[in-house]
Image (cartoon, rainbow, N blue to C red; front, side):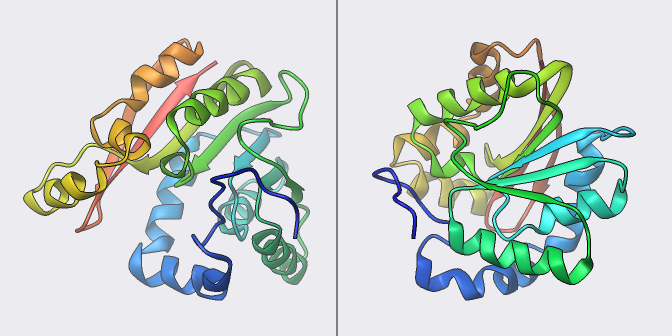
Length: 214
């Protein structure tokens, strides 16, 4: 197992939960519809270079590659166990998807390397300074005019969502998102345009889709 920085949270929250990661996503988060919406809102063009930051077990990266066979797709994650599962899934499908181990706060890529970056359900794990570092890194690796689709928990709308938000909002890094702070964070990082493009109620929380343009 690779060395991890203090406070790092693996894909499933704890290493022993990793075998349950894909089943939980399928049944709790209605993953098929969620992943399809992410794909649609990412607006990936022909022969795009696409990075999935915090790719976990590779589900979204594989979906992108299936939908856009001419795209270059790379998944990055800090959890080697999740990447091992992703590697097996990719091999079964016989698709060409790159996998790299690394962190959102220190992306191992050259400036302007990608046309599109997507990241789903990663930012709520990050402390606020790391959210800012990750946003700056993502902007750095985007080509001019490229875009970043960030999907994660955001401001609640229903009574149940607000009740859970009061509980989760006790920690500062989650509170920033639940109070609607992501658009300002992305603008502060230097993105030229930030849009709230969609939201989805999950019953217990609200998922927001933000698109930011380099």
